[in-house]
Length: 120
Image 1 (cartoon, rainbow, N blue to C red):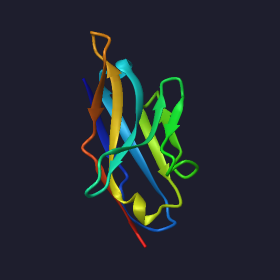
Image 2 (tube, rainbow, N blue to C red):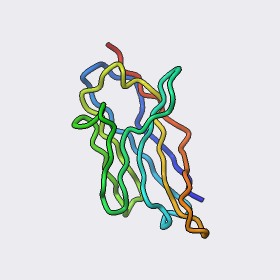
Image 3 (cartoon, rainbow, N blue to C red):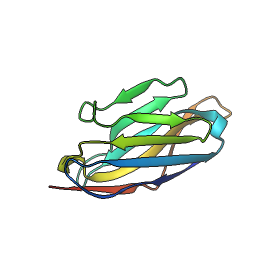
Image 4 (cartoon, one colour):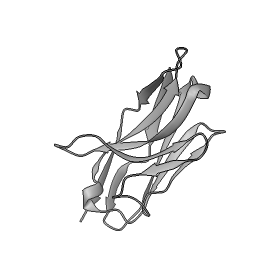
């Protein structure tokens, strides 16, 4: 099992920046990828950005060039630097870890979420 704890959410004006952090614990050596998803009111949860152990990244089109994702493998932590924030970025942001169990199947672990609110 992998446990995740997020930090760094808050209220910011449009055009501002925030940095989210997510620290993993538990079966950390089984983690394949970590990243961020978000869910706005009345909408489905959507991918924001992910990064694999090898450093391969994947971004939603809406955040490309604004939200670089990075990972510190020594600290088992993933970061999301959110720049040029827009009101439409307002959502609960969830940290995700994709990890292997003994059956070699990938499972998902989720953090409790952190609120990001961007005012216009």
